[in-house]
Structure formats: C-alpha cells, structure tokens
Image 1 (cartoon, rainbow, N blue to C red):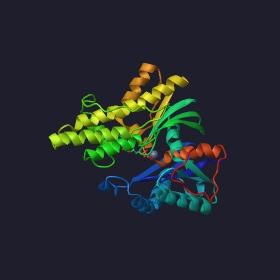
Image 2 (image 1 turned 120 degrees about the vertical axis):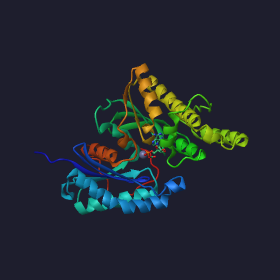
Image 3 (image 1 turned 135 degrees about the horizontal axis):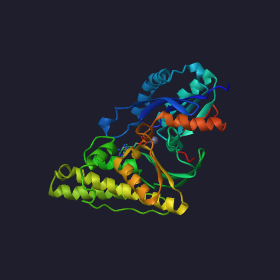
Length: 336
Ligand code: KG4
Ligand code: ZN
C-alpha cells in the first residue's frame, strides 16, 4: 500500500493565521484565527499582524493536527504561503514552515496565495473542468485568470490600482462602517435600491480593472451631500451601499463576460474574499443561467483567506514534484 500524502499547510499573508491538514487532496482540518486587533484602526496594521501571527501560529497548528487526528510524525510535507502579502506576516508563516520541515525532515512546498485562491475550487465537489475562468477578487487583488490545469494558469487581466475588496473597504470607511467593510456593505445593500445613485463605471483595456475612480467619486458625492445634510450618509446608508455594490459588480461582470465570450469558456468560478458577497454570487448565478455557464462558488470558509487552499495547492505541487529549497524567503509581491 502506498503511503498517504499528508500536508500541513500554513497561511499567514495578511490578518488570518490559518493551518490545515490535507490528506491525499482531502481537507481534514482548516483552522482560521482572525485577528481582531485591527478593527479599532479601520485597517490592518502590519506590525500588529506579525505579532498576532507569532502568538497564534503554534496553537492554531496544534489544533489543526488534533482535529485532523494526524500526528507530526505522519506529516509528509509542509506548505506555506510564500507570496504575496505583508512581508512581516509572511515571514512568520515561512519561518515556522521551514522550521517544521527541517525538524520533521520532510519536503517544503512554497505556494502563491493567488493561485491557492483559484485552487480552492478543488477542495470540494462540484469541481470545474479545464479550461475554466476564475474571477479572483480579494482585499489585495482583482484578476481574471485562465486556468488550463491545476498548475498552469495565466492572469489575463487585473486591477491597475485598487482591488475590488479595497474599494468595498474604503467606501465603508467613508460611510463610518467598521473594518473590514465589505461584509457590512453587503449586509446593508440587501435593503437598498441599487439604482438610486449613479457612480461611474471605469473601463480599462482588455481584461484590466480600475476602482480608484469609483472611490474618488463616492468621496466627492458624500462631501457634496453632507454639506446640505450632515446626516445624509446615515439616512441613505442602504441605498448608498446597494448603489456602490451594484457598480463594483457591474465592472467585475463586464470583464468576466467579455473573457468568457472571447475564449468561449463555459466553466466559470469566483474566488477570494469578495466572492463571499451575496450580490456578486447572485449576479453570477443569474448571468450563468442566461449564458449557459457552469458556475462554481467555493464554500464561504474557502473563499476568504484559509490554509486549506494552500494545502490543496501544495497537494498538486507535491504530485508534480515542485518542492522548495529550505533557504527560500517570502516576497511581498510576486507574479506567478
Ligand atoms: O481573500 P481575503 O480574505 O484576503 C485577501 O487576500 O485580501 O479578502 C478580504 C477582502 C476584504 O476586502 C473584505 O472586505 C472582502 O474581502 N469581503 C467582502 C465580503 N466578505 C469579505 N467584500 C464584499 N462583500 C462581502 N460579503
Ligand atoms: Zn486572499
């Protein structure tokens, strides 16, 4: 009988400390410790994130191993997020993973965070068939990715400035909502009129996006309205959230539809934290019905940052023999 591939995976690129155990491509555990320390600052404070990762990482890994019922001796490889992310946060996960791989004398696997978001589609059924298109939307990225196989992906287009999640978070901040604003805007938008306020739709070349114009236009709009009525935002919160969300979704969907039509691809997925947005999910499902797409949306816990997606990516890298040198260091920005 051949030995199982048991991967201990670590994710620490931003403000989630996560550890997962993936056995032969099956997720046995996926622990996520979300750092609450940033809430009062309205955004992630990098130095505090690194410190919180240092406090969390050992207990999170311990519980992930216990929940999986796997002992350290059964681990066949250790995987970690190598890029992109906050450098101090990445360093904590990288150092821990390298130390573990060294101590257990098992291979080390370096994973690109954005590739892992896409491969979250392979954690559970139904899984997309190749080639498929993935709209990867997070707090740091907005990309249209062509996936030819598990490890052969091409970024067709991306944002030239802010990411979609950043647009949600920055607008939320202007409205006085707590960080991270995306989930709050989503919730408030449910009771709002998406057509009440009009914001500009930017259209970049090919499959690229831009969200900084939207942010500026919401800022000027609020400044103007608040001059007439200082409580304008509070009184119209639901409609503002719904209108902004509608604009972001239209910009995302325009590029996704364009790519799907030009490449004649029917398997379409979304990934990253913003794919938790209920408006985006509904629009995607509805568009899918209209255009005959097979739509794939990972379970919520696999959409936002998590180590299960790092583990599943590492599983395919293990099968392909793609191991990292133990001297490898993380990088804040990296193409893939
Ligand atoms: O992928 P992720 O967990 O971390 C990064 O790699 O950035 O994404 C976090 C982003 C944040 O900007 C957050 O506001 C956004 O995802 N987000 C949402 C929702 N849930 C999370 N944005 C809109 N609607 C949501 N329901
Ligand atoms: Zn992410």
